[in-house]
Length: 228
Image (cartoon, rainbow, N blue to C red; front, side, top):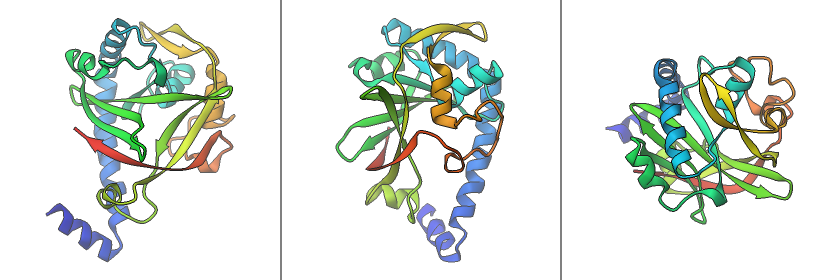
């Protein structure tokens, strides 16, 4: 049934509008859940990762909210954490499962390299981005929508285009956030300028990287989604 509806929507030229409407609805539901229980999920994730001696740090929207808004961004549907790729323990998935986090999805490059994972915790989403070092920078990988295909077809064929988000390499330290002690990059200002541009202190709900000067650059890599 799903495939038939997709074909009809594509034929009518409304597929992209339909996907955007569905995503907006999902985001609104997830954002409400985040406002209610996001702190509980962050506390559980922090405890589990600390027990594995993993420095999982706030990044993307979670870092922006912590630094600029002193809390979660009201319309953010998930929590973004980062981990340096070389610090990821072999039993990460097993230990996260013991803490109540079920692995839901991975972003995987064509060479098999995992760069992002999504976990489900009591209907909330936790995104973990792997960070890789290149010279004096770290970078994470962001998968974008396929140029022309709907996601299921793209995933089965040539995959999704990717960007690399570069930030200055630095250390991490624990700081207070809503009563928790959580890791953040010591050069938080530099990270947020690299990701969101120099105007990051101005809230912009429909922010798009292409409209600002950031250190997010297009990559020739292609990626795929692996579900569990």
